[in-house]
Amino acid sequence: MTRATKIVATLGPASNTPEVLEKMIRAGVDVVRLNFSHGKAQDHIDRATMVRAAAERVGKSVAIMADLQGPKIRVGKFENGKIELIPGAPFILDADRTELGNQDIASLDYKELPRDVKPGDTLLLNDGLLVLTVDHVRGAQVHTTVKLGGELSNNKGINKQGGGLTAPALTAKDMEDIKTAMSFQCEYLAVSFPKNATDMEMARQLANVAGEPWRHKPAMIAKIERYEAIPHLEAILKASDGIMVARGDLAVEVGNAAVPALQKRMIKMARELDKVSITATQMMESMIVNPVPTRAEVSDVANAVLDGTDAVMLSAETAAGKYPIETVEQMANIALEAERAEFVSLDTDFAGRQFGRIDQSIAMGALFTAYHLGCKAILALTESGSTALWMSRHRIQVPIFGLTTQAVSQRKMALYRNVLPLLMAKFDDRDQALAAAEKILVDRGVLMPGDTYAITCGEPMGYPGGTNMLKVCRVG
Image (cartoon, rainbow, N blue to C red; front, side):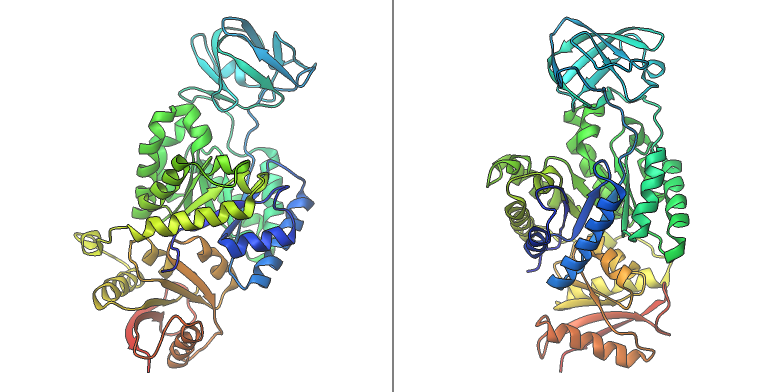
């Protein structure tokens, strides 16, 4: 059984060498995340080059996801690097302050905060570990009382409980970073803190313009981490190619207890709308310092897999942790074991569904046929990868192979659940293409003499969106 759920890993100091990266890819990494919150443009360009080279050495299709920083809603720096907030004590957040902060006052990167809050609002700092209650706003100063204290160090993030911060999703830095990401043609562009579909449409337009010299259009991932995004989930999904369930900031804004149900809802909605989903944040957090995960982390990863997520993501675990390779290995094993327990109900999935497109109907027909005939594999000859994407939206324990002549489509399919993307030569003749596809799978040891498989393609060959044929074959 091959692993269906994909693994996204973040590059950082712990994994920023060709040797470690290659071992991580061999251990199971399918998508490499470049975090644009850290590093300069050339750093990301160099890392992208390193990812492409490592993937080629391993002989595996690996996608690159550029993750934009988004608005910096943070406190400034302190005289001694940190302070201790005491419950019940007053504390001021000053948008005009340029000096270092101290025990009584801190500067702000986010200058609009005084306009976004009112007395009675709750501010959460450092991922919700510190809580302030707003007493009043005086000019550029937000006067608060410490409700939940503790250590506050330089540049920690600020969230407003229940949402309401007006910061735009795309900053001037993000717009420059989009140009950098397009220079190495990232397959996925993740947008931080979108509030609505318009944010995603704007990001897509900027990316398409920046990618025009290379005729490259990345797939757009909306990171759901704002309270305001929840009522607009469907519209955001329709304007995107997928979502990231970014549980860190989201939990701070909506409350920890609300996140598990939201996670299930978002993954389900993504599958229904033929979009991809990534589950992220603290999945294997303890493995930053420990060689094995906690039982709770194992359950967390397994439950995301059982929810139907396309991918599970590692952040600090592989960027800065002591055991980046071991973390990937553990996550791969957990996902594989969870998939063994999945319940396949393909007939129920199709009940009452209608398909208005020929290519989508062919994709669904391939799934239904392979499931009931017990086929060894499903082969989708696809230019854009769309046929493989539609197939991957349904649970089926038959591996799907996306065969394409386009390297970009091959890498993009690396994120699709239960899809193994492969590159093949271009053929104008249908029968030659079908024979070549079968040979690729036989040479890989996937298909043996006597095995049956379902294969889809378009005729004439080589046109995106042209899938119009389904064939069931037996290996001779």
